[in-house]
Image: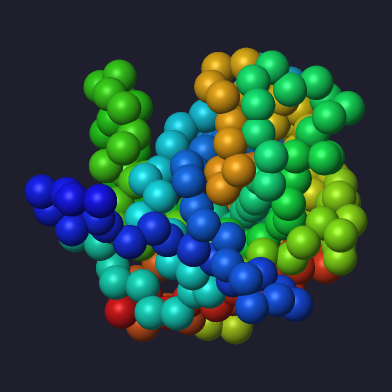
Length: 228
């Protein structure tokens, strides 16, 4: 195909147990999906309809590693999350059909410029600069659902320089994975390659250059980054 500029590379994630790659299409993120995190952020912990925001596909950092401290912020925060990788899509997906759409699961970090997010909230502006900056979405290799099953419970945790900061359980989600996927599919047509970040438990906090971040989810292994 003749293009006026080179086609940009499509980010891909590795898949445990295979040499095949998972190409990333879109990234959706659900906000405040754990009651304890909703409380710490000053939100309502009750079961209100979930809300979503996005990250560009090229914000993915496959497998973790070195992540640069982003510009125009003095308050970079960590948020460990269960990531759902879709192998099938659709619109208005029934709850019962969601498991068949899920290819697998991964550990993810939703890195956030918290000061920019707070300013955007105060001014009623969108969150793109706070959430969708370069390398803001480190993701571990994907574990196929055929290996790990469909996760509804299990520890989710994060430590910085060996000190634990976040610990919760997937069972603490306000909206479970099938509900999240089904709800998003009422707004957009989901497709193979989509990633869904499903929210973070309490304990989010600031990172500085040199910080070593380790996080994990029972059954999915770990993800590590260092802020440089």
